[in-house]
Length: 418
Length: 173
Image 1 (cartoon, rainbow over the protein chains, first blue to last red):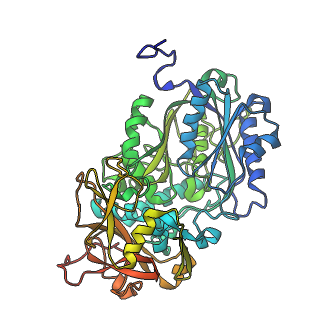
Image 2: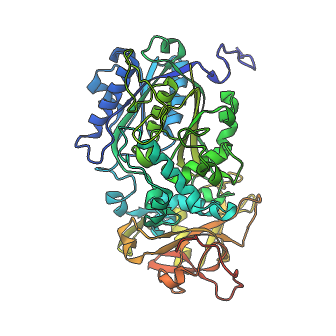
Image 3: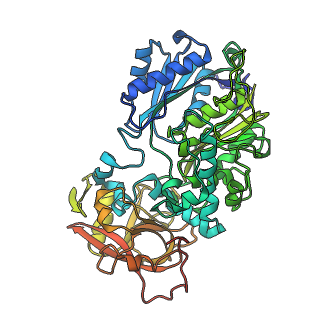
């Protein structure tokens, strides 16, 4: 029997506000965890389940991502006694977080499971070094890698650098403008007791640090850490029964890409990144625009990645990213703070999860800073952003996370306070 | 036939099923730069692929391509990650836009070919040569010989070409 041409579904378009993030969990952010990725994963997932106020039996879906450097869902779910109706471990790093949130929504919408936990567990310092040193640096160069690695073009910084350099050439972006991202994120981290690097640094400190590969100084690059992180996605209906104020998902775009992922530099302008394409999905799906967003989580594998994404998602005009990240807008107390936890540059490197964790807490109005906890168990935020103080953003209602895999691939998600 | 070799102390290999890369590097070993030209739409592509990125045709022919162009972007590596490169810092990784097929099929597309800055004999360039090169520098292709059937395409300053007065370089030396 033929189906109607335009199948009617009862779902609202784009599933806007139908799903929520109800639990977030982390381990400590360390260099030298002393435990396995399996232990890190179970620790983070358990924290997320407890944060949501759920039981093991409430979680029946599990998604994770890794690059051959972590433990599969089978062991994490086994250790915690979760009986799963769906699980999948995907290959990949940055940009996977938001993409998997979108997949979790689809799984639940399709009736395959009800509540999904997404985790990333990595010993990014003490086992598989994210910067590509150690075992990965001496791996044989085969086949397609001969067009890159054979030229000493292997680490993320080396491979992204042509995009960064061309942006400076095309738009006159300066090293000091971009260094402001690190300085500002370090201010945020100084108000985050969990952050690996809590010390504030200045633009001068960044510019005086040694060159790794132009245009990246040491302090333009993120930290390598050991950690597990997890988030829990379920329907908005179930979210109302969870412990915290619901944080609703407005829209998601996952691993949206430029052409020629095999070598994306074949298509230009090379100073444009995947956000240029992703924004055409993100904003219409979310029903909001950049001007409606109170806080951003623009992936800071490098200072430049934060700037490039904010620019291509439309938070400023093309070419004005340098001014946008250095004029105070992205600082706590500014118009639209970015990575209030300190992000990958300072808090710890998680391939994107901690930036979602942070924005969930911001939207709950419950950032875990050093402000005193009141009799209701909630922090009494002072909004005094001086070192060691508050990092809760006032009247925080809408967030945007901008995930990054590389110049050619990105993911994004808009959330709002329910 | 599969190739295994050592380059700067780094193991390189191509397996015998990777026919596209074997063909590409075999031409390089003869110091000729060849790319696949699609037999349907006529466009060249880089690096080797198993179908045409513009029309999906699986059929292509290897054709000679002039190894000349200008530096479109670059990185200058001071802290090498791979041990093979630690003795060669600072080294340049150049993204070179070929003159051939520039701006085709759309204005933003071009054959952008990677390589290190090298001396004309294919040796990684010394620091004084590194400092002369930036965005806009005209370069020509040379080859680093690795083993029979495998040479790597590289770039050297095209001394015969009209050079920009000051190629754009990262402001901090």
